[in-house]
Length: 591
Image (cartoon, rainbow, N blue to C red; front, side, top):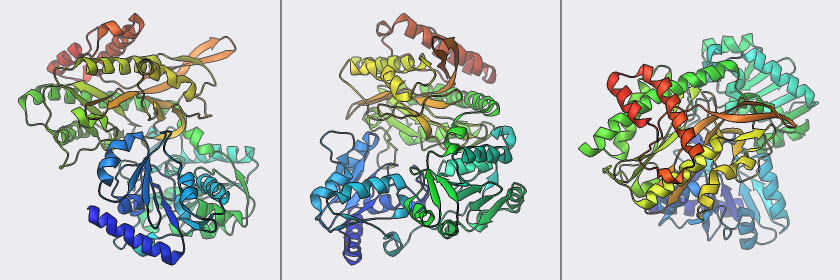
């Protein structure tokens, strides 16, 4: 594989010389700025061999580098070995930014190439401004149409209707809510590019992106109609009639920029969610109003029907997980199970649940040192057998018609070291501290992040991924606009938002630990200077108590865990058989 990657990079450099660019930047995204993308847009993986979901490669005539975050440091180091691509670890003080790297290696008058369809307006501007300080130009051009000979086609899976009994609101109601926001912004129309926002707005789903039930498309909403840009073959007669009934006019997917170039009036778009190419097409005829997409916040705040569905999905997911954990406890000592085989077993048990559609992301089943690779994915080459000792980190989730789940459990398969127990308990303390938070309305995730990190900060440890991300409703497992992380995010947590709680610690070559539940923001009552909010933990699955050092927990923390386990048992036991109930009762015993 390394020779293949080296040959591709050499061919790319030959093309760069012909295109008169001295460097080229390839991100992980698609024209919709998605985190997870259809194979047609997996250009960065094709050119580098790195399979993580986040990373950007920069190629110059003499150097190549890949920038990625802490989730993928170990994985990237392994996959890039022998390719001639250097690893640049983001968020470390010694790591230069991509613009700084380029300014240090290029000369005034040089050009840097990007494909404008896969860069947001925001990112393209930042890059353009940084390079301009060194008289370096930015040039938009697509190399892949020339170089990627066996490039997969655009996804062709049909769109399908998402029933109101799961969505809670009709397409017409959502369009009217968006039109009200468009008017507030003084605009005549709105461009939506983010696939989750379009799927939410139209109450449509699809299978164009692995694990994310979205449809590759664009949407322009004006005061009377909506214009839907989608490959025609993806429209069934049922979907076509449905769209027509909602005054949605269909256009070929590739015709968006032509349509934008002929628009007039005031067009609202989000510079962080609109690709640079579409922006350039619209900028000529339209007066552009830039601001956050109103669909982002409307989508993030669950309605009553969505919340009811979420609870139901969590209950069924919890039942599948209890069946799995009980099976795992017996299977590991018997021998023969591996990271891949237990992934298959968990999939089988989830698939038996009503309304199951698929996984919400590829399961991370990392045993021992593999758990220290934050987004590890077992392959036939890396798969290892599970032994009755140490930790298994299992991060998984499912797509049900009535909700999306995401859960991580770190499971003691047998005897643990004192270091493993200490780390496990510290992470649990941070998890509980965040779960118990009560905060005034208007609080942002960055203000709460310290609650989850303080126990390990005191031991001079940290994790570099976020503590919490938003989760979609039968949509993407990672959605905004809220987050809980060290980085500042101006969006406050609001009633109805669903956010993960997943502190962790990772020690290369030894072990990794993460405990994750999903939190629903709910009212906590009135107080000094206004309303207060809190979290309701909605994930239902026992937290392994075998790794806990009880003396390290405060009484309040132990009380929270015991209360959580009583709720888990109460909600899950009616759907279990007698043996499973007995196992769950033991797993939920008070500590």
